[in-house]
Image (cartoon, rainbow, N blue to C red; front, top):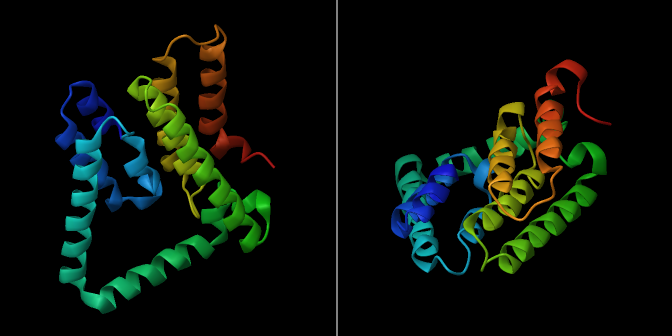
Length: 187
């Protein structure tokens, strides 16, 4: 996502789309928001991300075959069912699977609506809701996945205008996320 942002700032839309499409290799970081993150103004980036995802998906199917795809899907489902993988997600708060999926769907829609509303602003405003929403709607996360929150915070601090207390909020967020190994997640 950072590479995509940097390439978009340099008006290199196709390369930005390729960088964004590569997120399919670590899907819980890019998720469905990868395409939406480019916004309406970057049509070439969106197209390049779709093509990149398609090429990577086709290559994976050719290399591992249908049985490999099925095994991968089973592993993803297993990873989402392991309690330690869910303790940093909405699932830890929502409780049951149906409530979790409903909340994740609402977050995904809300994030895409914000991306759409911010489409005519600077690129930072497109990436922040895409990054935060994409992370919040994941079925499993690890602490290192929260690096994306750091990227969203940095991008937010690059926007203007913003309240003067923004840096304090971002600092508190970083301390809270970095402190999870010491004091655990918020209940």
